[in-house]
Length: 282
Ligand SMILES: Cc1cc2nc3c(=O)[nH]c(=O)nc-3n(C[C@H](O)[C@H](O)[C@H](O)COP(=O)(O)OP(=O)(O)OC[C@H]3O[C@@H](n4cnc5c(N)ncnc54)[C@H](O)[C@@H]3O)c2cc1C
Image (tube, rainbow, N blue to C red; front, side, top):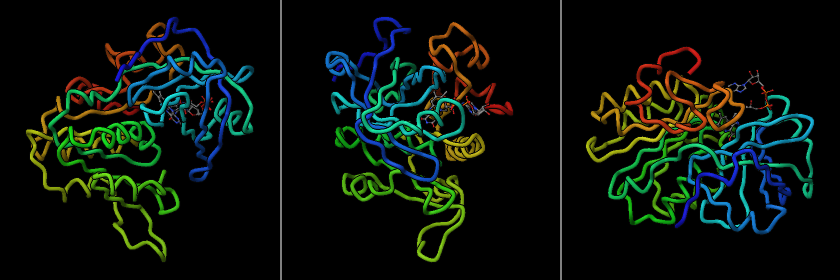
């Protein structure tokens, strides 16, 4: 597969049209998009873990990771939580409406380097969105990897993102364990935080790669537990979020120590991020 990470100019925006809108969980929606220019659709490729800047004229731009299958051609999806200016304006759009994207930007999960490894994907809430393309990639190349565990936590059973896909993922060889903070009458599964799922997992540290994305507190405990279990800091990968503006390392808004989350990340090894990991605004 050919993956291109840099567009011809990082400032070039491409018009996209909304093909479908799916309300996933409260305040969170997936937009499936096609490029208005068919050539742009053909040449757009991304690595799992990368993001686009979504631009709504009059409202501004937001960094949003790509949540669709990297092998799917012509369309991309973004799963967006309504929190502010741009994301709430996006929520008012209808099927057929157009806006703009530029990208893709940033590093991805280095999946090609993990061939032959066990993978533990530990995520919470919307943190599953930047991992979904990685899950699709793993399923598309399932024999390249050994055991693949997906540990996913949500606040309640109704807050589980992409829950309708879980059965397919399990059938495709992803060992899925979910947990919620608060169950309901129908919930038969685990109650507790995601790191408790990792505590129970049997793993061979040397050949395990850990991928994590979610609330900072969850990632801290995942890292702590993975280190306790003997996983090397260079084998623990985090996807980080920072307030982002230019997406190409010019403006400095997303700087974390010497790194720019936009161009050096958002995926980093814990080895690289360790000095900054306990900062409050990680
Ligand atoms: C690499 C990357 C990937 C992202 N992927 C997604 C995604 O897939 N889906 C999604 O819904 N969101 C994602 N985000 C977060 C999204 O970019 C922010 O929520 C963005 O600010 C929303 O824009 P807005 O104009 O709607 O909100 P704004 O008006 O910019 O902000 C609303 C509120 O959120 C706060 N805020 C802004 N950015 C952040 C942030 N990064 N972390 C915490 N608080 C913040 C602001 O301070 C403000 O209080 C991602 C961010 C990054 C850096």
